[in-house]
Length: 350
Image (tube, rainbow, N blue to C red; front, side):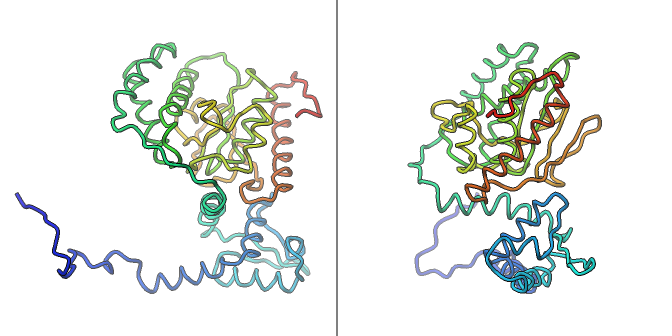
């Protein structure tokens, strides 16, 4: 058996592979750095966000000039920088030039706006938590949880319950965030999955709607909360993220609280929290609403799909968050008028 020992402090460091063997190549680094440099401007990021969230995925200079108190030539200059590195494409129609996100960059831009940007804001703005350690051995707790759920969800096999509990715990742990509530959240998430799995076997049940975005921290949370608020138990509502964040965006929490979803998980472990997208939720859903997750949202046959293009509240001003919430509210009302024609909605509610 080979024994590994620490080298003396004055020994030469000789790793088995030099760092250069694993680093990005210099030519590739030059290309990536040039693209990141082009993106490293606040106005360009705002213009990119505006283009990404338009209904038809494109915008002209006249539209984007309203983002800041700058002239149209200045806007054109910034757009040209993004176009020169390939992030944007352009097309002239008459006297105006229209800009779209390049297909090759669409996924990267989605990740930048929906994951990287909110994480950067949360890192700077969120209060620091003291950091509570997780359980040193979680398996006994998960086993007890699975046994409890198998008895509470009719028709659930104990082995299936344990599998779903373990998968749910792992999926929630990977998304990051505080670990102190991980087991209570696992119980809520696993129970939801088991109920969804059982729902696929029932012929008569309320319609089930699944809202999916990238982080499940803003748009999909708002949509699910509004639909639940209006429909109550007449519709089963779920939300999920293709790459869930560690927590709901701070800008969204007050709106969820207004709808009765307390953001403080110490008070209610079943309150809104980002959840990963699972096959159980997709199979159980009758209607799947995607909200900016693009190609990462799988498509199953026999489902009704809609894609709602709305802005990201994590990156918006307070008035912008309100506008996004109002737009989602209008879309939710329209969906409900189709799913439940007899449901009477108060036009002033909420």
